Image (cartoon, rainbow, N blue to C red):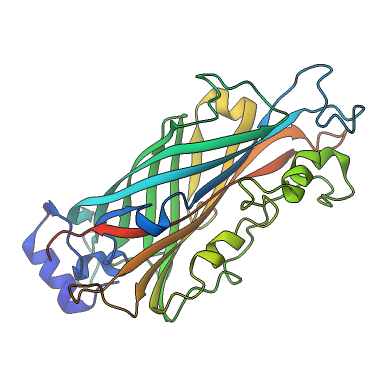
Length: 339
């Protein structure tokens, strides 16, 4: 949250909508985000995605080597390039509180940082295999477009989350995830980010022994592009920063299970593959080495897990299997507005 002096200055200035600039104290832990992040130069093609989807085709086997094991889902893997742009900031947004509160800033004030995420697929593979069509492309294709806001809550958080993410997904999903940020010295610790298991919850997750998970085992044994193993997706994030001298890392964590967060979906999504929870961690990394002009260099990494609920657990109606939809990426800052 802002200190008392900065908060008083924002309140006195009133609400303003301007170009977001780095270093603005009103952005709090979001202050390094303004600008454009992309898979450029040596970080091209570093975006990876995995998703399990309902797939019922009578008589179609998961694997020709196990013809008796029929598929009711397919595992889809994508390699992609991304552009993530943080542009406008709406500062001093007031949430009105009780008029009789005997404290300064009885209202809550916040800043809303606008972002647009564009993801373009480079290649894709799935099992069981589907045809390469305009509806299920295996080559270059637009696969994601997300407008949203990141919020910095200046005050009145009662010790709870002080950042939030509002995301709108064209599939028919509206996301509110809450969280917090922290600045640490050195590189990220990818082993300290909570539960990011990539395997479905509600079934035996022993990939090597459970034939139901044959698509996961196939890509474990035969990684996509000889790189992406769906049973260990964070390995590529770790590899991307090996040998990189990272000075500091700002860690932003968002989770729809915190406080009043959640996901709302259109009826078809709820019925077929309900998105029930999202957890995402972003690492904004300042490199120790300056660029050729003497300016700081930055990288942005993230890991996101969305749980999709479909198919009942076992033969009893005790809930649905939760299928992790995981996205990871490593990007660099390619354009920064003047501060």
